[in-house]
Length: 157
Image 1 (cartoon, helix red, strand yellow):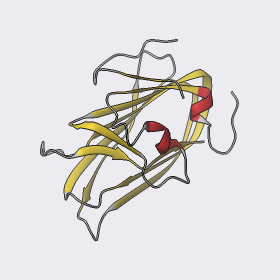
Image 2 (cartoon, helix red, strand yellow):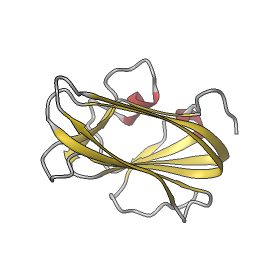
Image 3 (cartoon, helix red, strand yellow):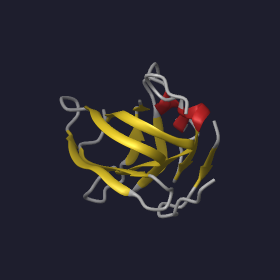
Image 4 (tube, one colour):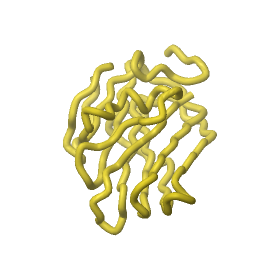
């Protein structure tokens, strides 16, 4: 896994093969705004993991995938779990055909109310061609609370 810590508003700088789910660890570099060492980003790309990624600090977080070659994305699956803190989260998905100009794909809010509403699962069907970069921005608590962003699963196909 190639990764580096980036500033939350850092612009992307530029630097194939497809199965049902893209092997992100093999075909992309990952940029993240922060990472709890106990919950590295690699865990979010593996469907068999239940812990996933967690930010090291509160506030808005960025996960950016920089693909080695332009590719087509037809499906995006995102899973979030929150079992402790009631909160309203917002996430935004962006994609770029050239690594500089990002286009907003989805902006969505979700209210977690553990223990009854503790999981958000989103499975989007899309038709994106020539994708060189993909970005997920998470605001874990739109009211500005101290919740840390987390991501159980991020899969692209």
